[in-house]
Amino acid sequence: MTNHTPLPRLACLLLLASTLTACTQAVPAPVDSAIAATPAPATQQTTAAAVTPKITVHRDAYCGCCHLWVEHLRKQDFDVDDRIEDAMSPVKERLGIVPEHASCHTAEIAGYVVEGHVPASDIRRLLREKPDIRGLVLPGMPMGSPGMEVEDVDAPAYTVLALHRDGSTTPYATHTP
Image (cartoon, rainbow, N blue to C red; front, side, top):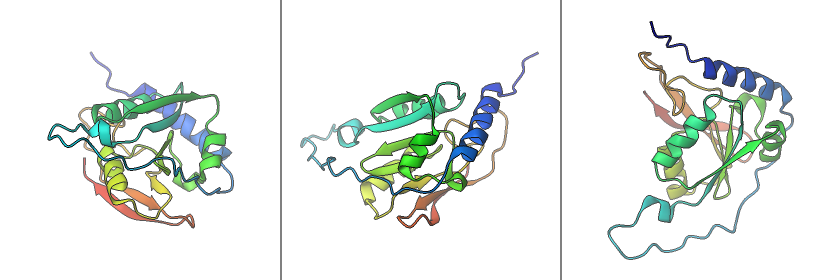
């Protein structure tokens, strides 16, 4: 008999609960002006990695789902700087992630913050469109989002939010797993 209970995700949920209670006041996200749009080589075989800046992912070593999101990004040709943090609260505070927007991991890419299990396709859209926002957030850890898939479970739809500079959010993309 096989057990399909995702025990690592329980640990991740517990980590999220402790992270959410430790976050405090929002701080504006830093803007990385060093990322410049470099023209891609004039070939038809340009890889996605050649036009995608490095994404720095901050995560706790003991979370059972964060590494699955990192794997999702790598499968989508992102160059991932995977950083294991002793404490996530200082990272979230530095990047202005308030408790109601928090998830278990936080990333930085091209001056934007990406909080939670945001699909790679949304991050690519963000980089392509370059809206004047702080980043994208997917609060909590919605079942069915990248890294939160559970075999034989029908997951509900979830919505990634655009995080505006004033801290407000609006829907950015809705996904039906």
